[in-house]
Image (tube, rainbow, N blue to C red; front, side):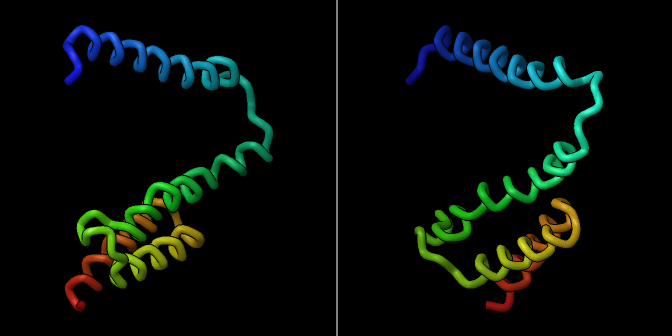
Length: 106
C-alpha cells in the first residue's frame, strides 16, 4: 500500500503534468486560427479513440472470464458503423442499445 504523503505528492505532480500538457496546446494555439486540415483531423479523434478503448473489452471481457460472446461483437460492429455515419454520442447510444437488446435475446 502507498503511504499518504507519497499518494498526495504523486497526485499533485500528475495534476500539474496534465495541466501543462493541456496548456501547452491551448496556451500556444488558443488565440490562433488552426489550419483547416488540422481541424478536419481533430474531428476523427473521437472515432479513433473509441475503438482503441473498447476493443479489449469486447474481445476479452472480464464479465465472461475472457471469453468472447456474440452480443458484444454485434454491439461493437453496430457502434463502429454508427460512428462512421453519425457522431460519437450516437455510436455510444446505438452500441449500448444493441448490447442490451442482444443480451436479452441470447
